[in-house]
Image (cartoon, protein in one colour):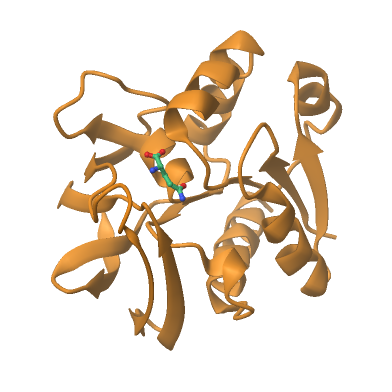
Length: 197
Ligand code: GLN
C-alpha cells in the first residue's frame, strides 16, 4: 500500500490527509525527527500550505531540514502546495532566504497581494482538464529551469509545475473536493516505485 508522509508542523495538513485517505492511501503525520525516522519507508511526502517562513524555521528547529532535503534530492516524490512550493524553490524573488531549495524555480511570495490575495478560479491542469483552484495569499512561479515542466497557468502566471519527482502548486487542491491533482501526484509516486523494482 502506498504510504505518504504529510509534514504536519503548521498549516493545512489535515485537509491533505483527508483527500489521500479518501483515495485509499495511508498517511502519516511528520511532526518531528522521530516520526521521520520511524517512517523511513515513505513513498512520498506532502509539504502543505501555511506560512513558509514559520515552516522553514521549524524544519531547522526540529532537526528535520537536512534529512528531508537529502531524501528529496535522492528521489523521494514530493508535492508542495503554496507555502510548500516556496519551501521547495531554489530562489525566492527579492529575498535571500532559501529553504529546501531543491526545485529549479524562482518564486514570488504573496504575488496576489497580502490581503486581497485569496480567490477561487478554474483553469486547465496539463493532462487533467479544467480543475477548481483555491488561492490563499499564494506565490507565483516567475522563472522555471530547463528541466521544469509547466502544468498550469492562471492569467499568464505559472501556478503549477513539475521537475523530476517534484510537484508544486501555488493553489490548494486539498480545499476543493476535487482529487485529481492528488491523483496526479500519486501517479508520480507509483511511477517512482515501479522504476525502483
Ligand atoms: N503566503 C504564504 C507564504 O508566503 C503562503 C500562503 C499559503 O500557503 N496559503 O508562505
